[in-house]
Length: 161
Image (cartoon, rainbow, N blue to C red; front, side, top):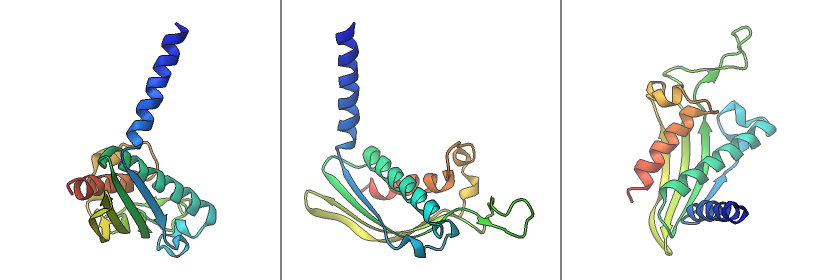
């Protein structure tokens, strides 16, 4: 019984490590203190957001990129979905989501494979129809609209290359 448990654990660890070893991703947030979104002006909130989105990009790379591919992402600007409306009593720290306040990421990307550049460029990723995304509306995680938008962009734009 003890051997079976250890063997199962070893196989699980090997599978997890193997799935993330296929591709590498490097994510850099360039001058995040100058980003448009007000959440990036607070040091602690900025660090939490950087950690959250860096981890999400790494998860996407582990799922979507092929073995041997390397992706470098420079995040140049971020605007999260919604905006604060401080004139609303009791809701001054709540983001109000409207059609006119979509999430927006400005990215510089470089995708390589075996030292050969497959794609590179600067791109603004935004989703004007973010409020119509049903899976994001029912998600129980932080920033579901941004993550849904980034997942769609990542899988449609980078994986096809």
